[in-house]
Every structure is written in C-alpha cells, then in structure tokens.
Length: 238
Ligand code: XBP
Ligand code: MG
Image (cartoon, rainbow, N blue to C red; front, side, top):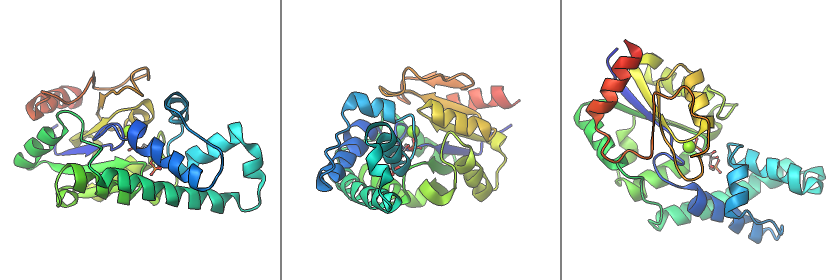
C-alpha cells in the first residue's frame, strides 16, 4: 500500500528532550515547591517507564514519598507541580537549547515536498509540541502538521494505543497507509497496537528497550531518505 502520512512521536524522536529538557524542568518545579525531590539522569531513566508528566510524578511519589500521596489534595498538588514544570520546560525550549535530532528536519522537508501528510502523536502537552516546533523547526511549523495529537486529549497514554487511534481518526487514514516514527518501547507498543507500521530511532535512554515488531531500528534519521522509508513501508504492507 502506498505511504500517505508520517506520524511522528515527539520526545526522544523529534528531539532529545528528556535528559536536558523535561528532567531539569521537573527538578526546577520540585525546588520551587521545596519538596526535596531531585531526579538525576539515572533515576530519570527508570521513571521514563511511565509516560505522562503527571503520571510520572505520581509514580515517583508512590515509590519514594508515599506521604505525599496521602495528603487530601494530592491530585491538585500534582497538577500544579506539572503546570510549573511545563513553564520551566517551555523556557528551556524557547532558549533554543533543544535541537531536533539528526535527519528530522531533512525528512520532514522531503515529506512536504512529496505532498505526504504529517501528524504528531505524543504524550506531552500540545503547548510543549508547539514550542519545540517553533523554536527548533520553523516559526510556522505547527501548520505543517495536519493533526497534532498530544497529552490529555485521550484518557490512556502510551503504551496504550489511544493517541494513535485519535490521530488516525483525525487524519481519516487507515493505519496501513501511514508510518509511525518512535523512540521507545512504550511508543512502539502504542503504535503497533493501533496497527501502524513503525520505524524506531533509538536514543541513549531507550537503546536497551525491546523493539520487537518494529519495521526497522535505526540510531537516528541521518541519511534516511523518504524513498527508503517508502520502500520498507511497501514491503511491510504489500
Ligand atoms: C514522552 C512522555 C512525556 C514527557 C514529559 O512523550 O512520556 O510525558 O516525558 O512531558 P512522547 P509531559 O515520547 O510520547 O512524545 O510532562 O508534558 O508529559
Ligand atoms: Mg518518545
């Protein structure tokens, strides 16, 4: 079947946002709240097993600070912590410190040239997506994507397929006409469960993940042409 759309994951795929973006933003919010929490690079690797910033905070507290969850307004405190974290993350992204990964800009340009449709399926917030696209791709890059599925728009985050079903429904395309590009086992499982052929570009945090079922696993998109993606997509869906 002919390829009609690319569906990009964001964190870890479009850009390496986790170690030097989301992680310090979480820590800045924890410092502001004087929680005494600090997520170092190694601990964050473990915490990434849980997608969604609010869900990750709750997961951490359950493991390391159960009294925090015992407070009556724990949900509200988590929500406000996440609002503060997002404010810090947006400042980091706006500073231009988070470049896109190798080959991403070139592949998106090729896809636009070939009139492929572009979409995003991510666990992070829509505002984080827009900020990254504006700062690291182009001021009007949000408009290049027909569909942006992000964050709490669905009830269940990756590895649940919800966000990919949501994006496919808004694209109006069958899964087999699309190619998902992901970086993690959670992302691959979400895309595969939605029936999407999926290419993985691993990164430092996800290189040990189980990528069974991926169409291919690459170190990045450098020197990855659209024609090569169309070929492996054709092989998989014919
Ligand atoms: C990765 C995630 C996100 C980020 C943090 O999203 O799981 O939760 O780690 O962002 P994806 P938020 O790989 O699906 O792009 O704090 O905004 O959730
Ligand atoms: Mg990701």
